[in-house]
Image (spheres, rainbow, N blue to C red):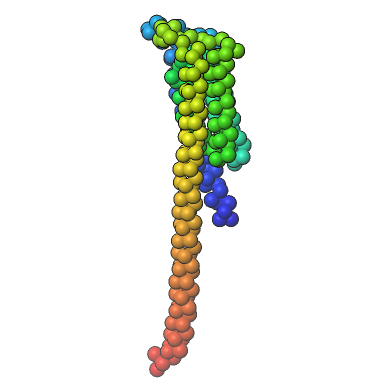
Length: 248
């Protein structure tokens, strides 16, 4: 029963973190819509408005569905489903981020570093294995965009009004940035999961220590009650023995 209670505590923490991720995603959605609608008007930067808005609408849709389904999963304590939902959310987040980067400059857009934030979030929410799977996916889609645009497999959507030189055409630059970025993703995944695992282990140790203290307190209370009961019985017997003498 103790192991189950520990597991329930961990899973409940996962629920709270997934809800936090859902709320955080609303901020990102408003940021995307704001950028698409405001930046071209005030900063004279050319953006692919339609595809970027489509990605933002998709983000809004699946985040709304996640927010809607979470209470049902929480009430029914479907913790495995919640873990799967967290994996799916981060997978879709990485996919949407890749599309946003692709339609707004590709490797010329410095916001591709936002991939690292998602890897850190995955390391906090998920297991090490799941985190490294998502890290590999993030590295793969980044390389597909960078090398695909560089070799002409995908159209490069240039950020007009920002850069005068298209860095994506320089293969040495693309290769160097890709190596540095992918290695950073894996380092971030390793460090985050290591710290998260240590914190979880510390939490488990504190939980076990708290349970031991509670067990000792229960034993002490039972001992005091038993001794008190025995003393009451002994005093009652003594009182019964001396009662006749009081009458004389």
